[in-house]
Image (cartoon, rainbow, N blue to C red; front, top):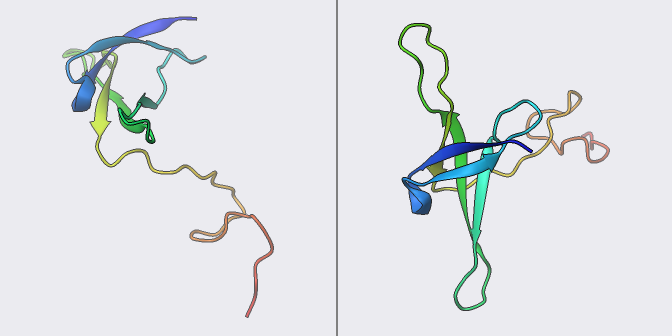
Length: 99
């Protein structure tokens, strides 16, 4: 597997550069989550980082790699968006009740 050295901005990993595995497209994942176990044995704290472009070249405006930015509110829960689902509906989980 191929990895890419990626910088982290903000949060507990600020300023660190870590090797992150890339996917089939050659890009690192959109989200990087770091679980930190609690000292008293409680639930682990999860720090979330979102992938962002690191910068662009001056002449051709080509992207110059990736950087992970800290998201203090965490990652929003992901639900699949089906074409037959209504916004705010149950996501196609069951029959719709009609008035």
